[in-house]
Length: 123
Length: 327
Image 1 (cartoon, rainbow over the protein chains, first blue to last red):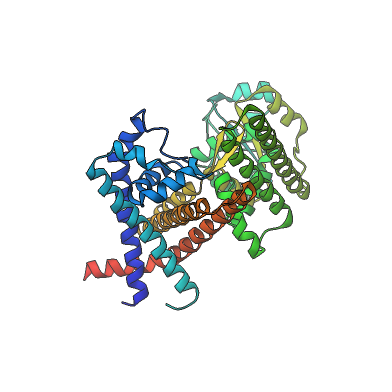
Image 2 (image 1 turned 90 degrees about the vertical axis):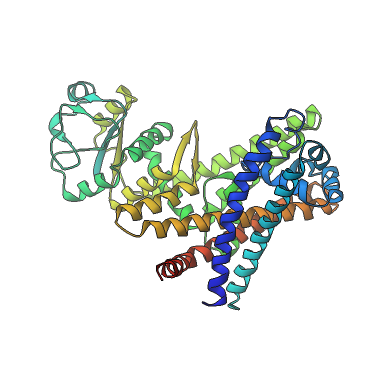
């Protein structure tokens, strides 16, 4: 198998895993948050359905300083409020969020990297 | 030229004869046999004296009940004559990989640079992007005072009207190009138009038109006056076509689902990082809008690229895995 074939398999495998984590995190954590009147308004603007899952994941896994800055910017309505979310989530929720978010971005940019390499005929 | 009759309720042929002046002799079913006295709803029928096998082909293309249902809805919402035009635009936009969906329309940014789109479609697209921008502004203005909100609403309305205008122009252009007399039996057509909302009549000139219509019917969903075209529906369609034709539908499903999921993940990932970068830069309103369009364009390009890559290569990956499992 060539490097390209292996990376294709890795991409597809990680897409499946990210998809599963998306559902698990969405059902386990975010569904509970959506029902909670204290937090349901700070989950960020949902321009595609399900984006709040990614918003919550980002708020719980990226540095809090960065998320606070995001909440103060003009685009604050796009992001979830990390400080409030931390009060209503358990440790399991946060670790699930971190695994999901980092794998999500890794898959996203990893694939982008492969796409670029492939388009420039490097692999 | 085939004339297709569709109805949304069981309809007795006598009623049809009384109200619309169509005799039972002139109605043919799928196998070119004369129909039973009652017409089945959501099933296309052929009108005319001596239908050819060519007409039968056209009937077959529009044959599935879901297609017929969608076609009746569409022709009642936008009119049977406009339906062809919309189908034509849909297929043209589809060739350029653009979908009549506000979010998806930003993809047009990428395509435009490639210069594959005709000028007038481009206008429609620009208008749609503009409308999208105004909507985002309106979303922002929710927090502002009433005057700013009213202004944003006004602007969105203007952008919407402009988009509609371009869309109408496009419809007219396509309609004008056709040298088809819209209704070749005037009396019968007016009868159908006035007597019933449960019957729709379509005129289909050839197989190409029929397949365009069927494609539109599969992808489009009528929501009030708005048509939404779902990309996902077409992917599912590909899989089921492969299944029906006895092809390797599992393979097709693997290809479609992995390329859909990958492009969704890539697009969203790039968009999120873009947003974070955008929020970290101190820019004004214009900057935000321009930045938003750039992000949408980049995300769409990334999603588009990955879709291409996975779509082209997932098939051989599937074969590889199967070989591996099979030993």
